[in-house]
Length: 86
Image (cartoon, rainbow, N blue to C red):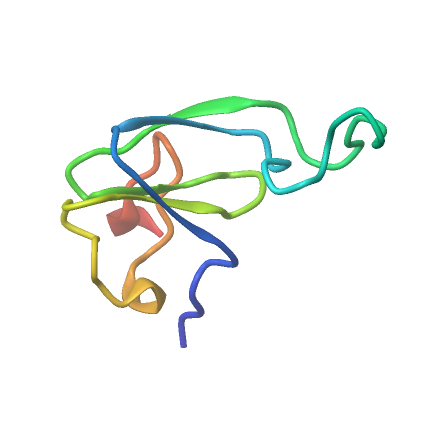
């Protein structure tokens, strides 16, 4: 049984970045976030989505092949990966 990714972000461009800390509060009254991971850049291909290899956040291209699909049924694709080989 597949489970959906912990977070799904719909994007309008095929090149995205992830640092795992986008939703962590920041600003003058807060210290810099110690959570997260190194910033990485990902490219969405013909599958219409890509997964971050650090935090499993899924980026789905709006209007792409995976937009509106059952995310639990899609295989994990991190950049450079091929879902056919997992």
